[in-house]
Image (cartoon, rainbow, N blue to C red; front, top):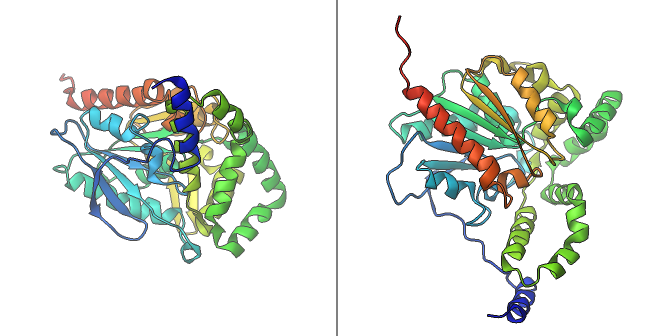
Length: 355
């Protein structure tokens, strides 16, 4: 098919069903409960190595790890030989306004870790989380030393909000006002509705939105480029909302009070987590163009996780979404994850020296 024919077909597709249909990696349900559906992705060959649990952030769908066949961390991990699982939180509504970090850190994620371990002959579980998914993974591992966790990988997860660009400005404003300009509207609304989340993400990507017409015109005969663009549009168009309590905690404790950097996170009057309690090998990955979690804010975690047997930091090129699902993620972020998981596997197999 010639370039003109491809271009004409793409024009029709852009105004129709899209240039490429969404084709998620096949999976099976391990269990299905409100805000905690656990999926196991299908393998055609026996797995090798410890299982992986992908922990998504709130306010996005699990497609962040499985955007399209060529942009799928899920498929990459399956190709490495791993058994791969993901938690799906589903829709968040006003009825969920009282859900906070505790539900994820003390219930949803620990339950999933134990289920994944039991499903794999009680093997340790490798946690991988992007954005708030990394925050939840770190807090879960730090708050539950008894869980069978083999390692933690946090991608685009900030620790020091003072070094976090645009977020640091919001932090300074919140310190002056007590954060009421954010927490009161969120309390009244019961959270951040999905339409607000979607609009906010597009505002964060305003350059992309403004230049999209030119991008389409320049790539009208490039089906692959248009498919990548539409996968991001589809991702943003399906974002769910934030529960009110979770969002208020994130703003007060993590942004204004910078508790992830201070090393002790106060989730409530009766729940405090010391990040030094995380003992598993840990990998932190930051993006050079990440507007929501600057590379410096992510790297700060190396000085916070003092109880971990190992802490690595790697900087990779890309934006917040790009580092986990962009066209170069395979050669950068995913390759870094693969190297880390290999090193964890080798270290667990290497016998300790005798004296």
